Amino acid sequence: MELRTVLVVGTGLIGTSAALALRKRGVRVLLADREPGAVRLARELGAGEEWHPMKATPAAGEAAGQATVQPSERVDLAIIAVPPAHVATELLELQRIDAARFYTDVASVKAEPIHRAAQLGCDLGTYVASHPLAGREKSGPGAARDDLFLGRPWALCPTDEADPEAKAAVLRLIELCGANAVEVSAVDHDRAVAVVSHAPHVAASAVAARLADATDVALGLAGQGVRDVTRIAGSDPGLWLGILSGNASPVAEVLEAVANDLADAASALRALAEGDGTATNEITQLLKRGVVGHDRIPGKHGGPASSYAVVQVVIGDRPGQLARLFQACDEVGVNVEDVRLEHAPGLPLGIAELSVEPDAAGALTEALHERGWQVP
Ligand SMILES: NC(=O)C1=CN([C@@H]2O[C@H](COP(=O)(O)OP(=O)(O)OC[C@H]3O[C@@H](n4cnc5c(N)ncnc54)[C@H](O)[C@@H]3O)[C@@H](O)[C@H]2O)C=CC1
Ligand SMILES: O=C(O)C(=O)Cc1ccc(O)cc1
Image 1 (spheres, helix red, strand yellow):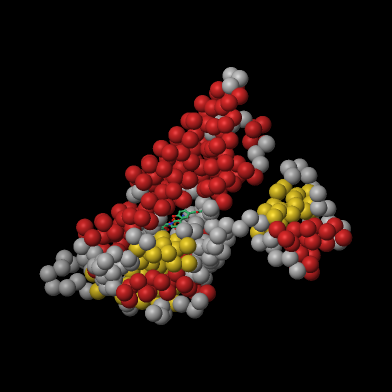
Image 2: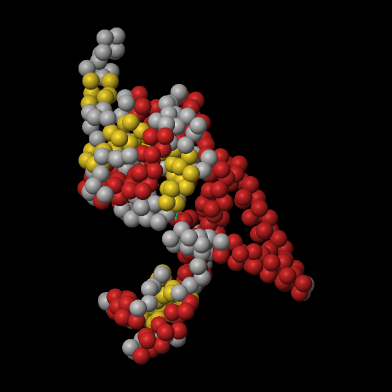
């Protein structure tokens, strides 16, 4: 199924990122948003052209001045990239004016928008709901990136009524964005993302909320761990209220289990503080279950999680240091799977943590030593 022209409705983070990815693959993209500024910025970023549905002359019987909107052309696919609560009404409006052959949305919840679309009388034959499992803690077109979906899962939830061609169009969108399609029912999707996205978001917010009145001393001691755990807590609360409300029961169920674990850990630590040494067992069990769960998260290419060895290298805070380090890795023939930078506050130094295949770590450490790098 070829996608020649795609309409993106909602040119925020996700809509503009999809538009940029499609533009890169030569697809013509039309852009719409209820905020004119969001469309202008997306257009200036190279995401496509503004969509101009035509205002038709009022038909006989229509109130004067109440001009009907018609699309200037029928696009192959419309992507509805607006908050979950607005998906169904946008779909209805777009279908009413026959804006596209096929339709999808990218909302983080699936059962509720599909149910609402059915209630409103939308055509479920041309619509296949979807959800890219990729995003950022920032909103708006300014945060968009054409590589946001590369190698990421992208769920699609066709209903029984969906036309196979509509599914093919959404699969092509996912492929053009470089993501991996995962077909799943809407109900299973919502239960799954409660575990891997929505409950973790609330947990991150709860941890980050502790920092709101933390002392300056505490904040001055913040390291990478707290940044990792709380990154997504910086997201737009309005958008997240909509996501959580749309998946309330599954998220509540996961949060209740997390809350039980936290309550047990707190009681065990109280017991430990009062001299009950046996309480360490409970804490160790939770930490061990955490390691098991963490190790089950698939690796960066979507395959099984691989445990890389980490080689730490001291780098000076000067331009070009990281480029030199990568060049050295390249010369030694070692593929760097991931890199993380730790900055030592107040020091002109940082640590680059290079994740490499375990059997390459020894040779890399030796080779970097020989080239004068400090590898502690
Ligand atoms: N933020 C994230 O990391 C991810 C978000 N999503 C989903 O993608 C959708 C969009 O989220 P973001 O791009 O992050 O939000 P965003 O806030 O960056 O963009 C949303 C855009 O939709 C526009 N909009 C709102 N209602 C509209 C309407 N009725 N008609 C036309 N435009 C309308 C807003 O003006 C805004 O420009 C949401 O459904 C969200 O659940 C999916 C994956 C990741
Ligand atoms: O920022 C991140 O790493 C995310 O995982 C963001 C995200 C937010 C909402 C989604 O529906 C999917 C992904």
